[in-house]
Length: 388
Ligand code: MN
Image (tube, rainbow, N blue to C red; front, side, top):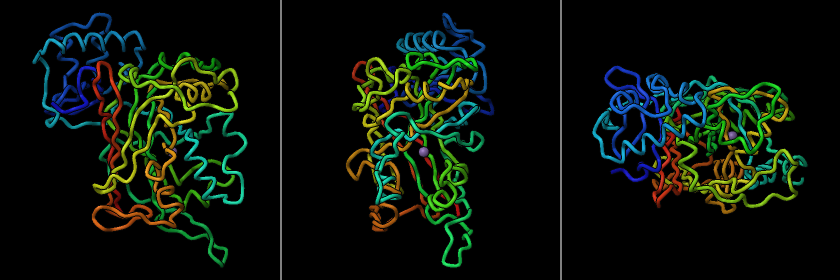
């Protein structure tokens, strides 16, 4: 059985199989057709209609009691070794697991934010004065979030002016990745009512790996002093496999520490971080291993901050952690940092070197986390190849 897909995990996906659109969980080398399993073994506390749909939207909207009931039902039925509703994973094609409502991306790694400050503003304090007081973020483009495997077309755009003062224009020469986790909102909230940090698990359905493709040359010219725009919005890739938040309970760890203490609405109780270890693979070379446990701001704090002004949540909202970077150079989650602003090329196993991505390059993000009962969870990977 494939490691990382045991009963402690059970990630959800939407797939096509024999011309039909199904939602499934993965168990080992198989997927389980949830509608078929519910017909054979009705799930207590779950309306089977939320399982007989082409994507995860209805189950996500059903809320935390239904998520828990579905997980208990699946673990009970599948522990008996039933062969009902099993399909080999190799015979299904994954699709976008849900319709993305709004997409927000944060900037929650102290190491990443500090590195970018050092690269872009070498003579100033690396961190801006607000950074330790709130999780900085921006609203991205939901319509260009794509499932793993979708080719990424190299974006064109304006670039910094040359000596004649006229901006350049053309394909990005500084195409980059950002290794992130994505948090998937299931339960909506009411406009005008902030969601507290203690309601994180009531609203967030699960977690996916996310690659926030970034064109650094376009970004560097367009975004000062406002937020990211066309340097980011051309594509964001997610894994089609959504790991249920409950599966990550065993991975919870305390945050590294927040100084100064955040305002009251950002205070979290208990371990709010996650011990999830990522790997960035570029054309078969593991170029970095970013540690999610090093993140300064937790996903519960990001959710509270995103709604503190009364902005509501919708089913299908997706928010990214921001680039995950650890303190050592081989734990940085972007090529911008790995090549230190494009000045220090790094080597791949095939003998070539890179600063930024070339046409034909394939980037795959992988991750593992501790699960219940000593199991290791393998998060579904997210991959994409650059097309010129
Ligand atoms: Mn990002």
